[in-house]
Length: 279
Length: 333
Ligand SMILES: Nc1ncnc2c1ncn2[C@@H]1O[C@H](COP(=O)(O)OP(=O)(O)OP(=O)(O)O)[C@@H](O)[C@H]1O
Ligand SMILES: [Mg+2]
Image (cartoon, rainbow over the protein chains, first blue to last red):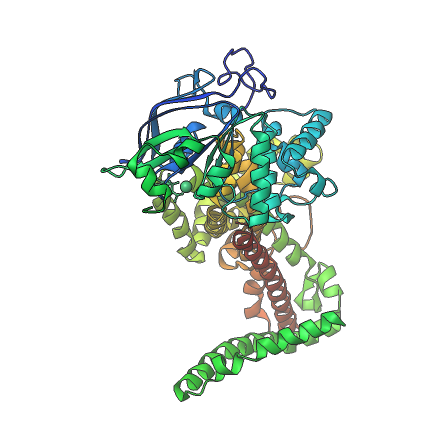
């Protein structure tokens, strides 16, 4: 259930803690595999994600980028027939440990989806504090404070502070996506996962979100899936390149500092991909 | 005004291409166009003719009694007194009882089927429930008469009287002798009859909630149940209200089964659900063969007219809600 069992020492199993100064948001993925029914979509993936930095995941369509991302906060297993194996250590605690609660994991690892998905029947304000309310926070002053802080961090406050009571669906697409970012930030996560957050947006809205990502990097560990290699080059510090192997499962081909991966790729396939020779 | 001119261009644009599509130069095209057009028109004409004919026959009674036709409870053909308030009351009360019983059950089942049930269980269960909809209403009537009514009289109603009946205000609903053929029993039969309708539509409405809404909630650390109450139900709300209202509209006009279990007596409007009564439909079914005098016949037809109009209005509202609920999906996905 959603309620608190505040005794746990680890970030993953302790509940209800809205502030998360404790962890840095370091992520270590060890030998992760993911299936949809019998089909293995991600194979033996291991990588260490630097805290308070932006890591981009690139690769051709269908290579398992979204699947990998959704494994990090245990969203993958929500899909029918989906399961995952391996380890994802958030500040040293395995989110796949037998006693880890997926509901708690998702509070510490926020997610922003490809299409903006604000809750249309909720106001802007209620959208932002929806997660806190789920966590049992009722103190109005605290909710107000978090709502304003999150909207400011998402660079949306100035545009919506006079329409906090309007429907969350009554904003522009770019505003809706920033609202979804604010909604995730309100939970004070250590990690923010973004799955092609700009693919439904126009260039102006996209560049606003990119600015925001660079801004947020100072306080959050960000993992972003993107199809746009310029975007990966613009916003990320590290880049991971995934590709389908012979049995059609996604594998990590190369992982390193973004500047190095784009200018001096170590793997032939990476070079082919970033120079547009395939994929 | 600017607005007017833009409206004018929009009309012009709309009219511009129409002849090309609708009229066409091809003769076969034109004949087909005329055929479907006249088919559509004749349905409307039929409906209009129905209302007009009902109105012509009902005019005498409506003219003579005016509003008191709807506000008094005297239905006495011998003395040519025709008040229908208790018919209307019976219709509303039985339909409401049906609604209160069926709505939670139907929506609960729809949620179970759409959100929880394993895939192999979904279609079979939905199929069986929807099968209820094809059972002829006379069979529900027979079952209600021979099976349900005795159970209601012997067990359910005495139990309700002994429990809820003792509560101060609420108890009024269950006062008087347990008869078994009364408004409550009619409501229960109606609830079973509207269950498949409400369930089927509610299931569609719940299924049409986009997964991105569910994922948004789950991603914030919601449990399954919180995802349903926080994201699915609010998104589906207007569609669910529409589903329930369509069930209400169906209960409203149901005749045969109700006639067999409602008792068909009493001119009083009382708070107790245990009083036998009439609905508009059951009153018509009971009276029309006996309507020998012209004013009597006219009064029966007037009841039919009222029933028809109210049903059309409720149906229209319900469809609007379902349609708007489904519209969410297109615009807000
Ligand atoms: N719900 C699902 N059920 C079954 N298979 C799925 C499901 N979602 C994805 N897959 C399959 O898993 C593989 C990886 O999909 P994934 O969505 O992770 O790819 P992706 O790299 O994000 O692609 P894209 O760039 O197009 O978004 C694909 O072969 C896809 O068909
Ligand atoms: Mg994807």
